[in-house]
Length: 146
Image (tube, rainbow, N blue to C red; front, side):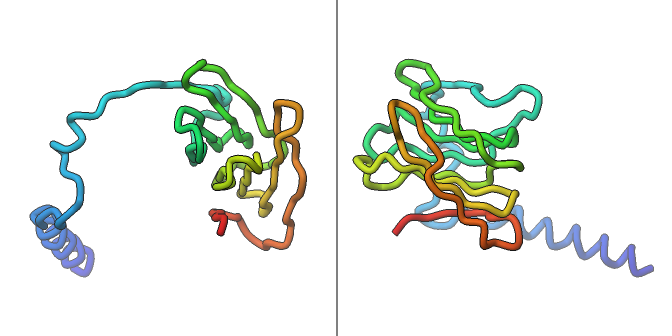
């Protein structure tokens, strides 16, 4: 009896949710019809597939930083269609990635389900791990730079 009541209530609530109007200022499905794919890449491992996070370079929007389920972060140039750097060092999936907003600093930050946050600095055309924060007691799920 209780399961039936919960199921009925769930259906009733779902119907109401589907009829909500689109909030003012929110993009509609039609707004997205003008967009098209400009670039596509699959630089992460094919064994443990999946990209969990992405950030755009602050000065060059054709360069992306992605974090993957393969425990790595990748800097990818979509103009040349080439991987610029692979940041290896986490022992579990990468949960968040961020370019430092001051592009001249050439710093990248990553976080992971391995309870760490890592700082990477560009050196000789690649990124090297420059610091690791290990003070967390659970998955680190986000990073921001102020």
